[in-house]
Image (cartoon, rainbow over all chains, first blue to last red; front, side):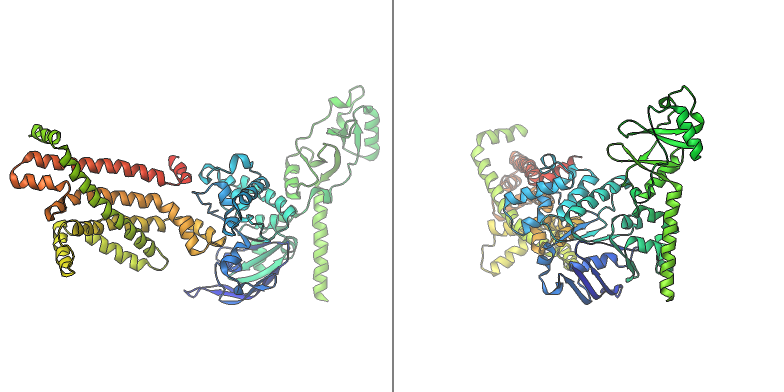
Length: 377
Length: 225
């Protein structure tokens, strides 16, 4: 989809911002340019829509040399969002979103319908927002409008320069989640610039890690975390890279079956006997419909006392799609160090313990060993 | 003295009306041309890589402001008669007022365009706007209120300077003032001075309204906060 061939940029003052960059971004891929400030990631992004013309090399989009196109027409075919958003204060939200359609000469009715669609997509009710002005919106809402605007004329390629950089961490995380959802529907080819490793891991299909104008490693997030190519990558991803890697794994991938589930009406002493015979310290209580009620421990089970009265309700629970980093954090506050996994109907479908997470590291360690083995061959 | 002035107003409203209209006409013609030239020059010098030219132009326009109006009329009389154009009356006064009006208009146009948030311009360019579209769709609409403020300043200032135009036969509210000075008629001086001031105040209020009216709605909301 997007192909960069030996692309370089030397600015008028002699700064070599990008050196001999060759890479390819597949159709529908979410590619993140990552690196410290001054590494050339933003310059690389802006060379794709020729906001910065490359000094050397070629950039192809869908096999077409971008140099051969009129730059304004090229840019109208590519979505563009920036950190400072740059919404036009004198235009309504609807007009802002329909900027590219306006430049392309769409009729007014069609532009408005498109703006409504996109507001819906980014979670802003069109009736409330379409005729408002940017100054009446919060930072997060403005950023959503910025995202909607870059989708204006439904371009196949989006270029995004730290679009979530200027908002508070909570809103940012929410916007990232929503943007991932949008992307899973739209399957755009996205080039996204950030200096935030966590954002890159969360969003990217592939990360292009840059340093001083050069591409250091271009790989999917798991590979980048598990097999950093050199000292720089290792330092950049951080000493907690294994912990960061947990974000890439979902609870449903590693959870196990509950060792023992007990229904509400069962006889306490029979349950106690079963637990003793299987040497279990705790069991999980469910109601008739399989909904999780809480934990019961062996010591609390006494004759004549209904199970319902000794149950410890859960402080936190996970759902199957919770990333492991969040799950781990929940387990640290949960009383038993174990986490119940519930589906959307609150039915118990699994349980997660520290051991399950430790096993993940074990697997990755093994994978790494295998790769090292390959290199030796 | 004040009574005499009041009597004059009551007895000669026709004369005052003519002077006022003459005065207004001179100021409006001069400022219309100052606006056209000033805005065009302002847009031109705000272009990329023209900072040097901009500094020079604004410097020259500022020097213009320091030339006393009587001296400027003298210069213009020389130039106009050399071109065999009318060297007294309406034309030299309009030209002088145009020159005086340029500075606030050029300066405000230039500053307003330069101060448009670069993020907006980058967003516009990144979405495929041509330089002309960036100017007409982003920079100018956002600059209009500031340009209007410059125009307002120019008009109000010129209402005062235009009074001196009567000295070289352009008519207007300067006429009673000069006539009063020549004939020791304090009442005439007061009539002229008071009406020049009133005119300035009324026009200032009207232009203020125009300034608010031309401010884009989305920008007005931001200002309210």
